[in-house]
Length: 262
Image (tube, helix red, strand yellow):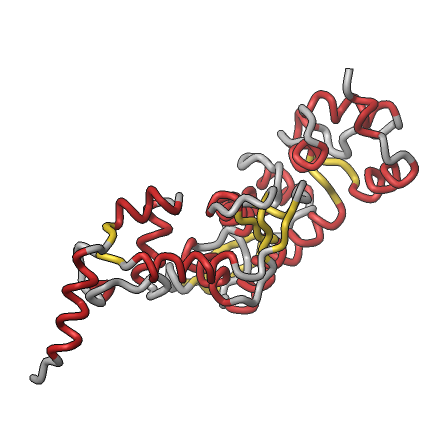
C-alpha cells in the first residue's frame, strides 16, 4: 500500500483546526440526527473520510462546513409569510410522511423549491413545499398509500382517530398494496382518495395556520358568512370545511379573517 506523504501532511494540518460534530451542530443549528445523515450520505465531507466507518469520531474543515451550507441555501427564495403548504423541514417531513433522508437529499439536489423565512440564513428558517415533496416521493416509491397514522399526518388537521371515520363514510378509500417493509400486501388509505379529500376539504387547523389566528377566531369568521363544518365534529372528531366554499368567501371578502378578531 502506497501512502502519499503530502496527502498525510495535508490531513494532519487539517485535523489541527478541524471542527467536531458538536461544534458544527452548535454553529450551524442543524439538529444532530439531520447532521449525521448529511455526514453518512456524503453531503458533509469529513477530513478522514470517516463517514464510511461505524462509530467514528468525525472531524470537519471549516471550508467543508461552509460549502455544505452554501449548497443548502443555494437557490433559496426569501419568504415573508409562508403559505399553508410551505413548511420547515420538520413539519414537511410529517406532512409528507417522508423519511428524513428523502427530504435532505432533495435539499441538496437543487431540484426542489427552497424558501428562506425572513431572510434568516439559518437551517431552521429553511422552507420547502410539502406538496412538491409529496409529488417527488410519489414518483420514487413503490408503496403510494398511507397507513392510517400516515394518512392523519398527510391530511393536515385530521385527527388520528378520524381516519377510520372517513373510511367508513366513503370519503377515504382503503386498498391493498404490497409493502416492501412488511413484504406482504397491507391495507392502506389510497393516495388518490387522500389527494381528492385535500382538494375538496380544508381543515380548521390548516385555516388557522394560514390565517395566523386561533381556531375559535377562524370558526367565528366563517360563521359570519354562513360557513359551518361540513362533517359533524362530534361524529368525525375533526373540523373540515368545503374548500371551494372557503375560497369563494375569501375571494368575495379578502378581509374575512379580520372579522374573527375581537
